[in-house]
Image 1 (cartoon, rainbow, N blue to C red):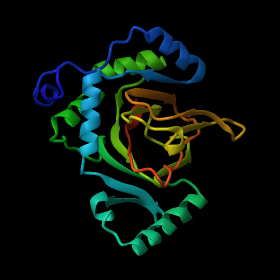
Image 2 (image 1 turned 60 degrees about the vertical axis):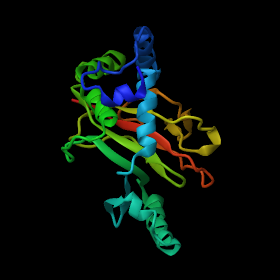
Image 3 (image 1 turned 120 degrees about the horizontal axis):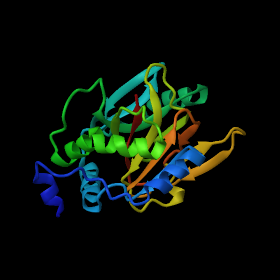
Length: 247
């Protein structure tokens, strides 16, 4: 099936790839409390979704400023004068030195605070897939947790200078069982940054995941992790869909 057919078809099957390795994935998660699933989406749909995200214009730049979460229109932020960017970077950096901080771009897909449906048929198809019983059942099988009831989701874009500091994803009242990162990034060398890093009890990096196309990383909550800063020379975008598996 072609990318155009995916964009126009109204009643397609959920575009998850076949999983003959389910038992192995479940065993790996049981041992390490995290696992990477290769080729999680049907390949043509994965490429279609990547293309849509490359073309996407409805990004919000998010960060903590003045002690609270802030959303800025990314297109408007790109028009700021250099001096204005310096001022923002100072605010972002001050918060990062004190504790939890992030700077990246997002578009909500499944979020209680954003009750809408994206108009783009491919992005909407991705949203429907993440809300489908088939995805929930796959996540239950991999994690061994029958408590998983649903997933929330956001599209994310990390460009140069974007990062997410050390945290463990625990949030009171959010009922998060595990987190996931669906990577839709191609051709991303290690020296570009933007790596998902898991931190051990000794404070050292325990494992590093470099973005790879059409892979799904699933990991238990809480676990300390971060996304390292994207290098200043990078012109590409680190694209992914992220969220939590919740009860």
